[in-house]
Image 1 (tube, helix red, strand yellow):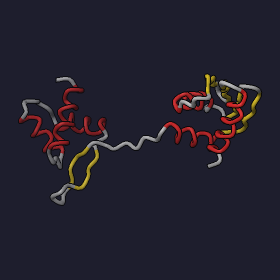
Image 2: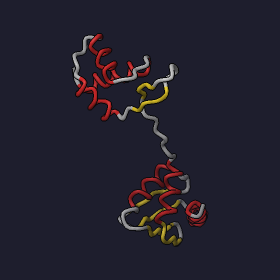
Image 3: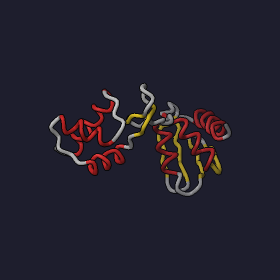
Image 4: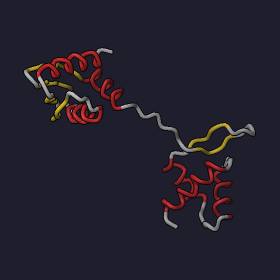
Length: 151
């Protein structure tokens, strides 16, 4: 059995049963006809980033990790708060200067947030060029970005 298939079985087991120890997981997989060792399961647990949570019976059991993914706009706000140096507007263009290494991230996040006033973005190491659909849209977006950076 391939690793991905084995790890899928592990997910199925820990979401449907209370598994407290690695040995219990090895035993359960062996009962299903999957020959595994504790060392293999130990590596799988680490790779899958399984966590132990309180079980209903008072002990602990394995569970899948929970990820708290920030929205794209929250990520944009964080990166602007940390790295924005300057914003300038000229006609339909906004020139943004950021700390080195942040330009591509900001450009991607601006596209992901999908502001309707943005035509396109171009990011290099420390700057982002934002092309807006109109000069008025550029002024409004510039103000929004300043507010986002100062929240």
